[in-house]
Amino acid sequence: MAIAMWWISVSLIAVAVTVAAVAWWRARKRGRSGAIPVANSRRLTKLPAYRRALLRYSSLMTAVGVVLAILLAVTSVAAGRWVYQRVESPEKFNRDIVLCLDISGSMVDYDVEVLDRYLEMLPGFDGERMSLMLWDATAVQLFPLTDDYAFVETQLQQVRDEMESASGGSNIEYSFAQGTQSAAGASLVGDGLASCAMTFGDYDPAADDGRSRSIIFATDNAVNGDPLVSFPEAAEYTEQRGIKIYALDANQFEDAFADQFRTTILQADGSYFKLTDPASVSGIVDQITSEQTSLMVGQPQLLITDRPNVWLMLMLVFASIYVVLAWRLRL
Image 1 (cartoon, rainbow, N blue to C red):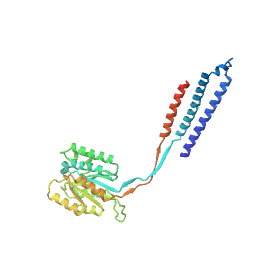
Image 2 (cartoon, helix red, strand yellow):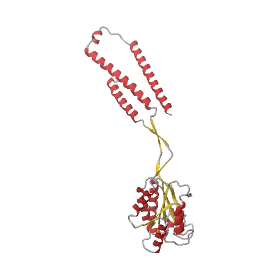
Image 3 (cartoon, rainbow, N blue to C red):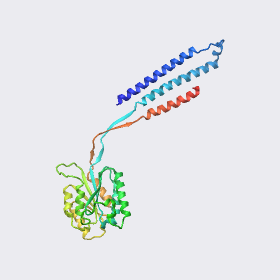
Image 4 (cartoon, one colour):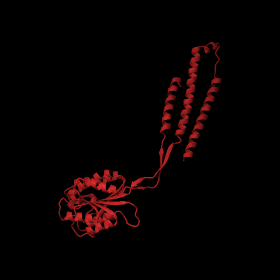
């Protein structure tokens, strides 16, 4: 591709030189054949003023020719498309994070605050892949693991705004909650946690890829119904798959629900935080980012960048000079 572009430039230069030579030769020939002799003009041509005017005119004509030739050459080279090529291997942090949110009726008053916490965490991450799971009796993935933080922020903000506008009502009114009540019961914590753990795909302990997997799990643990998997079983299953649980307890009271929630999370080697704790966001982000600091190197990518800046500037400069000289000569 680069060789072909250079041949274009060379061809254009050759054409420009040929055209200029033919034009000069025709002008010279026309000047000789069309000359009209004038008697007693030798005294005029010997005058100092005449010689200065002739010298100035010849100099300007020469300058015009030189500038025009340079302008044609620069334009021809610029037409060859100057590009810079480089190979980059993108680097990303090897962390996957699933935001796992209980949207049952008992969480209506807390979900907006949880989503605010999620949004506060975003600036603390750089390169991690994130996903959002919403669950009640059943779980629904709102978006898969992605490192497009603008997209993640937009999705979280949309869910937050819809929850805020529908606060005080049933989660059936939430458009994003479709599919979260496909079974009997509500706030089935064990099923919700297990579903979020399965988002990471198949787990093979023998094939350790060095990737850190985390679940930021928000609920009030107010179970209503019979889950397929109990909460302790789901927590043990999550731990066995090498997934770290960061629990955000939305229950404002120190009751049996809160005690069971905290105990189960700690037994699974997870971290427990109260939603009302202002240090919960920084605590979760710090713990996740300190878990795994190695980078994953992606496939090499060839990047081609057009860089005609220098040649375009030279074209502009010499075109401006040509216009000024042509104006002086009244061409």
